[in-house]
Amino acid sequence: MDVAKLILEYIKAIIWPLVTFLLVISFREEIVLLIKRVKKADLPGGVSIETFPEEIKEAKALSSVVKKEGEKKATATIPLTEANARMLNLGLSPSPSGLELSFYRNLIEQDPTIALAGLRIEFETLLKNLAKGFKVQINNRDSANIIVRKLKENSAITYRQADLLVYIINWCNAAVHGLKVTTAQADEIFDIAEVLRDQYVSWLSWGFPKQ
View 1 (tube, one colour):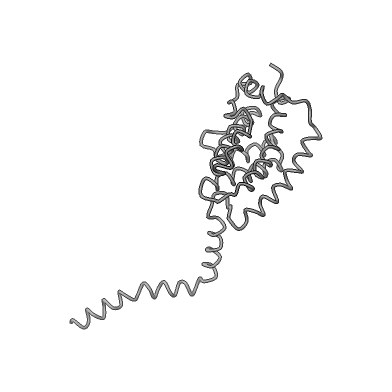
View 2 (cartoon, one colour):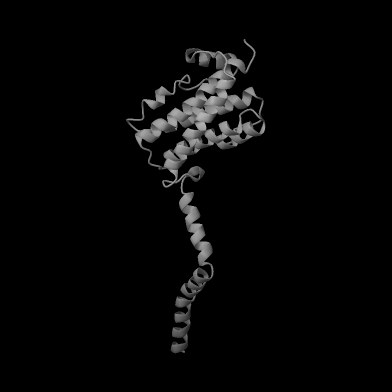
């Protein structure tokens, strides 16, 4: 009887390691793919340390295209000093920095993460204003990326502008969640962000009837 109990306990001890071993052998290819996928998606938006520098390079090239597209239909724009007054007159939310992104950019040397967190807050305000101005239905629980998608689907922004916005939002989110961003990389992100900021100012200038 003691021998039978001993054998039973032995079987219990080895059964789950054995099952685990057999599962690993049977699904080893799928498990390898899963580990690779997790490695690439360990930060919000699928940003990874490995791909981050290349993403910045791609976004810089895209921002040049977006800038040129904006210049083709450029009109006189209001000065930044009047931006918040314009937004308030239109019933929109004022910008935390008055659209002066240098307010956050000046924080880069102290802490790039704080600078990018501020940029993230700024852009979420601008996105909600665009949705209101173009009468795109959003709700308070929509993430910034969902708002971008809805704006694109309603032709409020171009698909290139949308791609650029997603880059910026994902980088800011990833930085807040632990992505190590150098001061040089943060500066490049702000260069890209300023292209969209300038186009937002243009939209403020012509997007609504004069008050």
